Image (cartoon, rainbow, N blue to C red; front, side, top):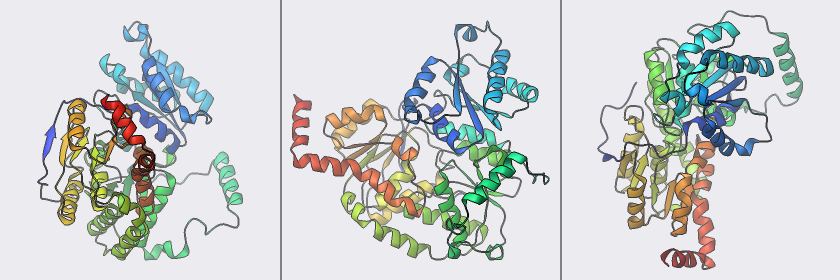
Length: 474
């Protein structure tokens, strides 16, 4: 991995050694929508099923491509045949949905009783003729967003190392393509403006570049266009919209992650695929997006152009939001591993960050982001935050009550208790599901960050905050 040589002189600490985060099996919520020809089978207990029902209850009007394989007493005591049970379920999935891939999501229970999912999957895959990818997204070993990391790491091993031979287009795909052409009549140039889509000969001759991270299609388009403007061609994404379109990755290819929690995927790309992972800050905020594009350009031997002007224009366009948080403080309790990049962006906005809680810290994968955070603090003239890995929530709350920050970004479990004590909070999970990457989504991040401040400012005019504090101290 290409990372800066110097180690950041930030203060690090580790509290409990436990994860206090959302369950990582929730990655199913965004991955099954991103990978359109997939089916996710979560293998766990009724507790896992209850969690998925509550976590994804907002999607009840859509027909989801995920299901629970609920373990009963007979499964846990090894009285039943795991292979036969999983075969029965997968055959039913194939018959009802006919997916291009079935992803088995292992949970805490399969980890504790040592279910041999990796041993069963290849045999069953050959028997039913559908690829089966095994990802262990249990809450014992992984934090919230690392569920996606385990899935993408497993899929990275399935990426081809050579372009497939040209095949005849299947009738179903021909029909789909024909329908797409019909629907696109009259709006061929709608998605990409002519000046943003260089011709093939306008790309620089550089090594293939793969981007990894599950982000919505509009974000994919934005980031692709940002690199196109620099003459850099993106050869593929992990994951693509369809499992059958996994990108070719082989020795000598470059790869760059767009999310800070994909360290396992990065390791897999380096060790298994012999790809070169670019250690860059992450494209969150205009400062991060500029640094991300510049680092990719630097590694690929391309001279970046127009980025300083683009960043300045974005900052100017969001000054109305930045003015609301400039000079205020924000405390991160830690939940989704976006904390370092978010803190760096908010410090650039003029905020101070006394402490950053984070469930897991891979200093190698986030090395460039850590250095960028340190440099940003120095340029803005603010103290460097303390970074606490696997924080103890009780101790954190005591520090919050002592520091009295203007805003706390936290998991959902602590939001209401903190609000009851008159402290502004924002759910960290909202940043996980929002579109926060690239220049164009800067306003969306600031909309989320400033919402509780704007809301409580309005309530303060009504005397509500004073009443809340009086009741909390009673």
